[in-house]
Length: 192
Image (cartoon, rainbow, N blue to C red; front, side, top):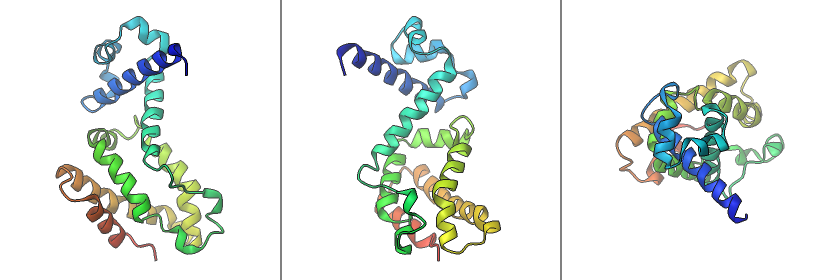
C-alpha cells in the first residue's frame, strides 16, 4: 500500500469507527454527516471524496466490522462445502474453537453488539442470518436428520437461548471468564 492509499484507508477507517460509535447512541436515520466528520476529525469534503451518502458509509462500516470479526477466526475455518460429507463429530459448531473467538469479539465490541440487536435491520442481521442458515446451519441440521419443516424453528430455539446467555453476560460487564460462558453454551445447546 503506497502513502496515498494508506491515507485513504486510514481516513475511511476513522469514518467507519465514527459511524459505528454513533450507532451505539442513536438511530441511523438521525445521524448526520456533520456528526461523523466531527467524530472522525475530517471535513465534509473528505467525506464526499469517499462516499456519496451515509448509506455508502454504512455499507463500508458493516464490511469493516465484519472483517474485524473474521480476524478473530484466523486459523479457524468452516468449510461449508464439506458439511455434507465430513464426520458428524465435526459438525458441532458449539465448541470452544468457535465460541471463544465469538465471545472475544463481543466482549471487545459489546456496545456495538447491543446496538445491533436493538436495530437488527440497520446492521443487516436478518440477511446475515439467512446467508448463514442456508450455507451452514441447514446442511448441519440435515445431517442430524432434523425434518425440513422443523429446521428454522430448531435453529432459532438454539440461537435465542445462546443469545440470552450472551446478553446477560454482556449486561453484567463480562465478569465471568469466556471459558465459563463457552462451557454454558456448549452444555445447554447440544444438538443430539
